[in-house]
Amino acid sequence: MKIGARTIKTGLVVILTIFLVDVLEARIGTVEYNIAGMAAITAIIGMQPSIKGSLETFRNRVIATFIGTLVVFIIALTLGLNPLYLGLGSIAIILICIKLGLNESIRFALITLVALGTHHNDFNMMEVVYRVSGMLIGLTVSTGLNVIFMPPDYTENLKSKIDDLRTKFESLYENAISDILKEEKVEKEVIKDKRQTIRDELDDTRDIYSLLIEDVLPKNKKLLKKYRRSINAVQSNLERLMALHRSVVFMPSGPQYLELRHGLYKYLEHLLILHRQIYDYIALNKDYQKAETCIDAEEIRKKIVGFVKAGNGDDVFEFYNVYFEATRINKKLEQLEEEFGLKS
Image (cartoon, rainbow, N blue to C red; front, side, top):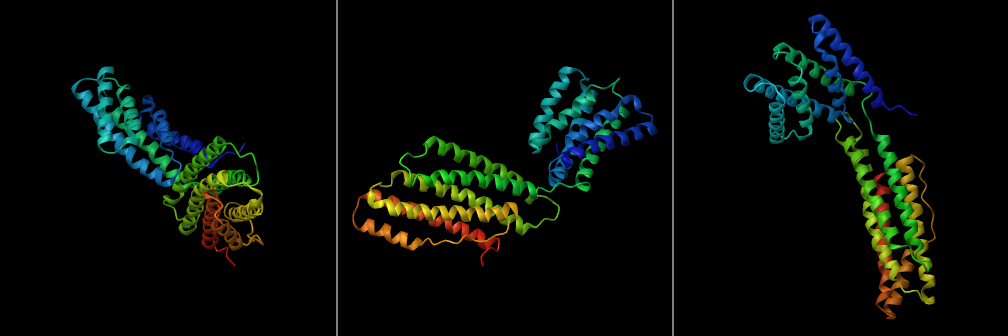
């Protein structure tokens, strides 16, 4: 089992937070308050998957801590700390946080309220101060350690997600173009399910990309933007593939069209090979050598135009639609070749 950097850092955060708070408690004589436990919980909650997220979380949760503390003070000095008033205080905290745009920190402000409002002996002011200090120590340790020690870099995660994404796309692509030569077409529901799976994978891949592009540590921003275009290319070609497959389903199937069907299939098969080679380079760092082809796309277009001019029926236009979408897919692949410097 592989132990990730975040797992290691979480353990270190707990160790360091409890150690620092124990030292502080021993010096100021507040061991009976058990500040370390609350500080450690705060530190764990403060861990974020990105450095920017950690810094934003630190700021927002410091504000949330003071909001929770202020509400506890007000309740203690006016109504008294009992379950009913703490519940009303929770509602007030939620409304305040929403008003200030601190929606992600609402939980933290409520934890502060509960931590301070339920551990009291005639509301000892210094106990509150010590507990708040412990929570701030936990936040500071988790944020600082995340920035300094083994800072997260999701570049390899992104490339892995791009590889997963393209693998799913290429599987669907194979299914779709194989229908050009088959009597029995792939079930419509199968195509729709695979398309949705790819769309979900696109969302997951963009989430990883966001963690990288928004990070505060220096990254190769130009390379990251190239990765973004490789993600967008899959999305664009997915739509092209769907349009292409709809036309494949309605193409005429007479024997006079057999040669044309084989020509279109070979053209699309070549694009699939090209797609694999480009994404092998992007996601797996494999050497790129463009696939040689003897496919004459212009000759295919001329055959289609010939059938159209012969007046063989409206359904013959489906051949042209397939060809047109194929050229759009090819255009995207050429753009990726240029983007990554793969054109000879």
